[in-house]
Image 1 (tube, helix red, strand yellow):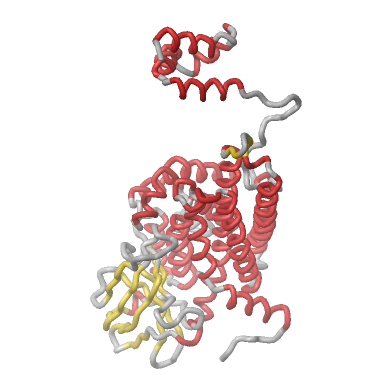
Image 2: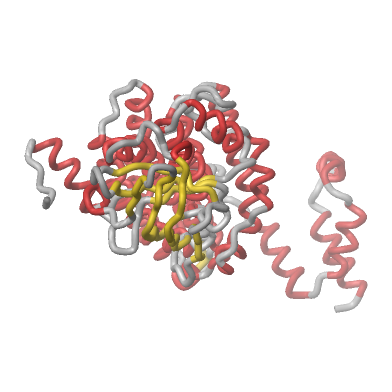
Amino acid sequence: MSVFKKVKNTFNLLKSVDLDQLAKINKQIDLAEAMKKLGELDESQLKGLMKMLKTKRKKGQSELPPISGDFYNLDLKLTDEQRKLQMEVRNFMEDEVRPLVNDHWNKAKFPYEIIEKFKKLNITGVPYEGYGCPNLPFLMEGIIAQEIARVDVSISTFFGVHSGLAMGSIYLCGSEEQKQEWLPKMQKLEKIGAFGLTEPNVGSGVAGGLETTCKFDGENWILNGQKKWIGNATFADVIVIWARDEDSNQVKGFLVRKENPGFEAKKMEDKMALRIVQNALITLTDCKIPEGDRLQKADSFKDTAKVLKMTRAGVAWQAVGCARGAYESALKYTRKREQFNRPIASYQLIQNHLVEMVSNLTAMQTLVFRLSEMQDEGLLQDEHASLAKVFCSMRTRDVVSRAREVMGGNGILLEHDVARFVADAEAIYSYEGTKEINSLIVGRAITGYSAFVN
């Protein structure tokens, strides 16, 4: 294309813009640089730009609504301060995490550099009182879990393991000395925590079948056994290990430091989900733990269950975040992707999928919102948290599946994010209690009969 023709086409693009519009545009962009770039476009690029500028909305057609997964405006129930914190977390995840998350997920690497940036948010140990913790409602812990998972479930899992399971175990079951030693540093993310309950041969049956044992020899506790799927364990400073006392047959908790002799954490490879999470297979071989590092208020599995009840609500919120991220990504995609000269969002079958997604998402959001309100009111029972985990993890599976479907083949590409949500939803479905186990907890509560096999 000749220079004359390029200049003519460029002029045609701008001739319909009046002086007032040009003045406004000039305040936002460098017009001279823009003109230079326009002159560098080839014929096909200029035609595409002309087509975009000529595209006008049909008479009476309104602006497209904002892309939001909060269809019932639950955000309006938050206070101004709570909403501010929510947006701080959202902006952090969008600005600091989203640009790097697909690459790290693909390579199964953890972006350690974000830990230092996370510190500035001051959101660790949200519901705890004292020890530098914010002492905010459990509702905000859920909101934060949702916002992190909305961008990436792996980062949300890292945060939930550290702030919920590890810090929660110390907060609920530790002595005052143990709390003072660990919680302030963990709140500032100066020390990272992990939580070791699941074992290679023991998943759902941990209440009565832990194979990892502990025995007091008069000076130290000797731990032997293995733990599997332990998130953060490859780099954590302290790992809460649950073991069965050989003498009393009761479950006890221990603060195992990474430098303890007899402790080994090996990274698990080849996962299809939560690839950023550094899960480890932990091996304890005559690992000596002093009495001072035994959780002083953990004497049975009932104490372990208190921690799980508190954090299971957060996992339900994670599921909501995963579903919301997938839905919003899918909605954005369908409004941009065109087939037969129309955005695919304008077709009936696509809209049906989107409505199914937002229906599930809205039901999940209202459920977990009320769940956290009950938690803040002191009304939360095991069955309430279990119902939320069952329902939200199931519905999330459906949402991410439909999100992938409306994207067609592009849905399996990481660049569109949904593929990652599809895979990570499978992990959410299983951890912190499978669908079957949580269903039995709810079933016991509503029927009065326990269907657990002893």
